[in-house]
Amino acid sequence: MRLDTRNSLAAMNPRNTDSPSMMELSTEASHRVSAGQVPKAEPAALHDAPPASLNMLQDLAAEPSASRTGQFDLRNMLDDLTSGKTDAVSVYRAVLNILKDMTAEKADTESRKQSLLNILDDLNAERAGFESWNKALLNILDDLNSEKMRLDQVNLQLIEEARRREEQAEQIRRLNTTLEHRIEEAAAANKELESFAYAVSHDLRAPLRSIDGFSLVLMEDHADKLDDQAKDSLARIRAAATRMGHLIDDILNLSRITRSEVCHAEVDLSALAHQIVSSLLSSDPGRQVEVLIAPSLVATGDPRLLYQVLENLLTNAWKFTARQPRARIEFGAVNENNQAAYFVRDNGAGFDMAYAHKLFTPFQRLHAATEFAGTGVGLATVQRIIHKHRGKVWAESAPGKGATFYFTLGGVPAQNS
Image 1: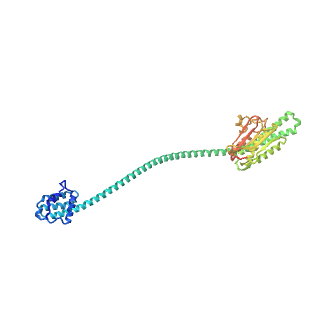
Image 2: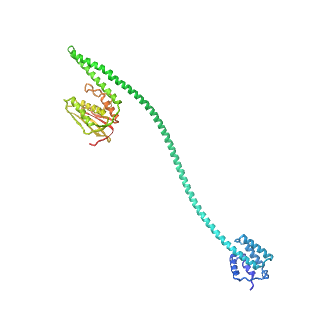
């Protein structure tokens, strides 16, 4: 049987739009050759249709899917076929082999293309991941910038605070220097006060003793030569000398209190009050006075100084109730802002609160000396002692309705009665 090469080649020509594709024809031709359906053709028969063979080889050589090596081999076969160096059957079989290689190469190319597409997909996914990371990093940078701005603001505040503290430290240094100068001045003043106290104690007491002594001699040794007016004058001189002596004692006592240190200890104020009232009753046994002393009033302070506080307050209460037929004196404590406020209350002469600011000033008196004796130093002494205990002292009164003096001691809590 003869193979119609012209028809076979024409059927394989890709220029025919109604024919199957080149790859489908190559696959069919490969099966036919493998099955032995393509017989050996005579050379004369192959030369009957050289244009078809040439067209097929030209189309295969121009196939886009053919590799460069396959295109080169097809061109060489085309040249051999054109020049008559080989027969068509050999060329046909070689073409089939080339087509098989091209088919394998195309499959490999498709596989590589798919691999590249997969790689591109992975790259796109990785790019999306990088963009997400990039956005996250940008957000972090924004946060860091915001934090940096906040830290810069805090740093400025710290710098300003450091500058302010440095100014305060400089001011404190200046104040300390001023305080040191004041302390030196106070120490010098205290030395002068000590010298003054020594002078008062020794230089003034001697003339007072002389005045009182010579007045007494005149009254005792020359009483028969003195009339009543002279005797009254001598009595007044002696009384004035005595008051002057008491005033010197009070001034010295006030001076010592100002310079003395406070020795803190537990003090039974109720016991001190009983002791002072007993002395007052002994000095004036004819008086009928109702005295109420709250029990178990204990405080922390200097026992010697607190004795002087109670002595001055209770003595004043005793003195200013002297004209009351039913005198009453009370010592107790109340709660004042969660702190114990001790008080001495009487129903004596009282005073006008408009003059209360003069109470604790030395030598200031709200009653005449002829009405009630005194030097005007006792309450000033009380105030200085209370201030040394970091407390406060105040009074409440009305004329003819008695008076109440309160005092607190720093750090002493109120007691539940």
